[in-house]
Amino acid sequence: MLELRSGQLSLEDLDGPQALEDLREMMSDCRECGLHAGRTNLVFGEGHPRARLMLIGEGPGAEEDRLGRPFVGAAGRLLDRILDAAGLARTEVYIANVVKCRPPGNRVPNREEAQACLRWLRKQFSLIGPPLVVILGSTALKNLIDPGASITAWRGQWIVRGRVRFMPTYHPAALLRDPGKKRDVWRDFQLIRDAYREIVPLKNDLS
Image 1 (cartoon, rainbow, N blue to C red):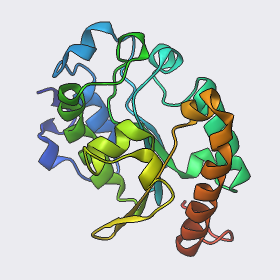
Image 2: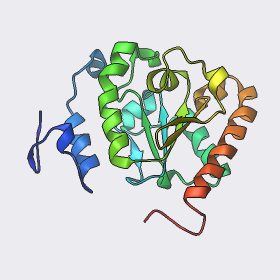
Image 3: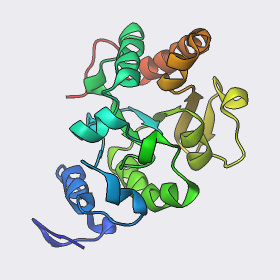
Image 4: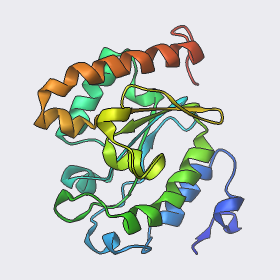
């Protein structure tokens, strides 16, 4: 465990406005699965620390690994356009992935790798506290909701867990491979936009 500014901390100790940065520092030398061996940068996540909407994808690609930021490659640029079309600014949401290190050759992270990283993601989620979560793609859906879930069957439907609503939709990378899925994703983001605007009206902001 790393020594942070406030002393020896565990995940349970993290709280307050600096908590996300403390969590990032705790993760900076994570070696809990084999993915750490091939990373250039850990891709922690980014966005508004009190975001009412969180988006969770699969894992970093080559550009994300190079820059240490999520969704900055071709799929990320497409996601930015989708958010913009829905009237959502990237700066007002929070974006993360199931795993924080790039799998070799951009392969799907295996169950063991995902499970090793999920405790970090759960803490991220608890610190941000978003009531709405967009699940981007099959890997995130299987690891966050149900190992047997199919993104084709589950997308476009709200899944309620306590006070949180989850909306699965296709990962932007899937749209690059199959543009025919764009219509479905736009329908999903219209539902996401409407739910978000019930919580955060246009005249308000998160500052």
